[in-house]
Amino acid sequence: MNGPSSLQRRIVFAYLLLALGSCVFFALIAAVAVEGIEQHLVDNRLISVASWAVPRYAAGLPVEMPAGLIYHHGDSIPLSLRKLPEGVQEKFVDGVGLHVLAGRDAHGEYVVVDHASDYEKIELVVYSMIGVGVLGFLGFSLFLGKFLARRFVRPISLLSASVMKNDLQAELPLLSNNDELGVLSRAFAARTAELNRFLARERFFTGDVSHELRTPLTIIIGAAEILVAQTRDQSELQGPASRILRAAMDAADCVTVLLLLARAPETIDAPETRLSSVLSAEIDRCQPLLRGKAVTLQLVVDFDFSVFARRELLAAAAGNLIRNACQYTEEGSVVVRLGRQAVTIEDTGPGIPAPIRARLSEGSTYSVPNGLASSAGSGLGLALVKRICEHLGAILTVRERAAGGSLFSIEFPQGLTKS
Image (cartoon, rainbow, N blue to C red; front, side, top):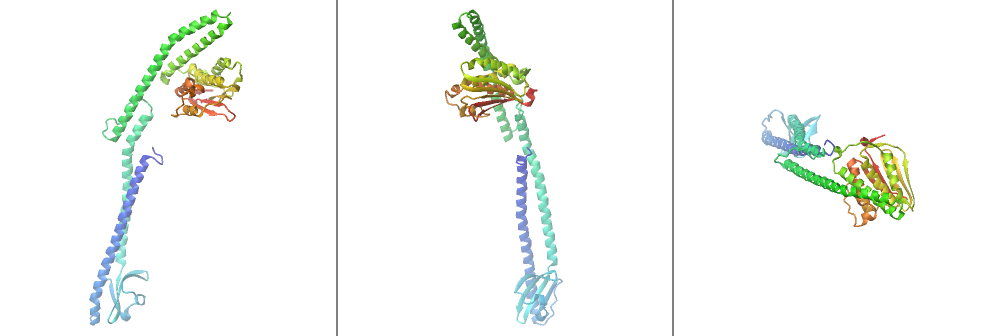
């Protein structure tokens, strides 16, 4: 919340900008007023003095000026003040500021001189006070802006921190407020409650369906095992019976995975599982899919490591990707590579269509045309892989190979792995 574009900084900046604009506006008004008042007073004073002194000088009477004022006529006018345009003006003589009223009567030119030092001192005092006032107002605005910004932003930060904790059971702050923040907090609380209900319904549904499927699958597996045992001498029946058994066992494994996914991740035990053994087992299971194809399936171990997760989840995630690659690759190779904190499955098949890649992307809402998912092998398998990765905190990415085919990658976080 303290970044260069934070709300608190923007509020403080707005206060300072408002204060600076107000100070400049009122300082200009004050400066115009000071200058106007000075000019008005000086002009009126010099004009009134001149209207009194000129007739007395013409009548030969003594012209005695008040302190600070001097009246010159004719040859008595200093050279620096002769031949000035008529009217009031400012002149600097020997570094001294003077206000001079120049005029002409029947006897010649005259000037009335007023030393401006007093006015300059008054101006300096006035402008100094204006400067001090501007700085003081800016400082007060900065303090007030920070104070109000903290009072305004702190509840938002508190609410944001509570939401970002992602604890759906915790009560949000500010629920009892009658202002806009209270409305926002109650809206978040209502949305959180709705998400809680949705997650609960999803978990109950997945768990109930999986439990309901386990009993018939157990019966099917038992019956298939009997068929396999009783048809060992009948080759035409052995193959179908073996396929039924494998399909039933795959379905049972899928049900087990769904039951695990229906539970919160923190409630599931996470034993240390060596990933190379999981991949080897899944590669052995997928070998029958390559019969009659010019496709090689191999495991390359660049860096072996363990993952703290249930073996069923890891096997389902890696097995679905390997199985899809084997099913849709007609020639070339399928390479399963175990690297540092990542598993990659690379094939030379037809690749994954762009809509399905977008569907697998994080946060994507790209819709998939009907029939496209199943034709490209994305169906339940890839959806299940994506769900498992989210459950484990891993990252699933899919890219298109430059030479054709797809490259899937599962990257495990640092805290989930062990060398």
